[in-house]
Length: 196
Image (cartoon, rainbow, N blue to C red; front, top):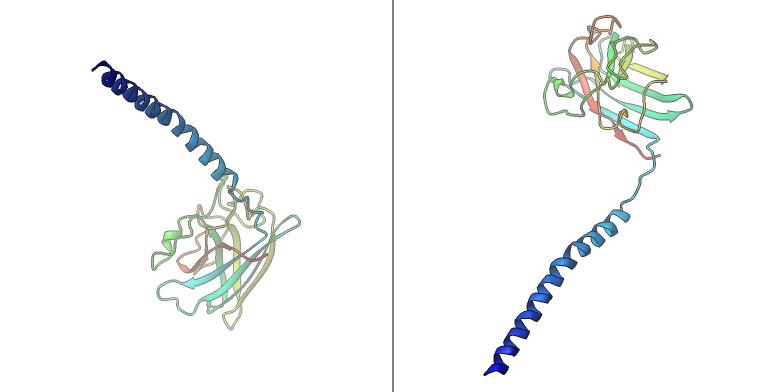
């Protein structure tokens, strides 16, 4: 009778030891799996080109175009061609959010301003990073813009990728805080990475 109890006791002890071994090894296995997973994460190279397709807001269906951003020596080259504007000047800004889920363009938030500075012109020493100045539309409603911006960044926490881009109804006066009195939003877009 003693032998079956001893056998049963030894079997129970072995199971207990096995379960303890499993509990001890499980976190190690998770750690090894996590380390392996972390080592396979790809580090992407910095973006050197970005593009933004502009979409008209409600009531401004004629406004459309494309804006391109290219990393260059000394800053970011911005090139734009926009159609369907009223002749004259139109405020042109990078805004906080790449959110186009509203008809009036207000989902893009305020001007992109990671350094918390006052609004100003594109060449001012104090300005929002997103202050790009004005587009000037000709008599046919076409605006062409080409400018090297020394403040913009494509990459990093202060980069413009994923941010909104806005064309306004009125000129930016470079003075009125915090918007330049540029008025309603005629077109919005999201800045995305482009093929190098």
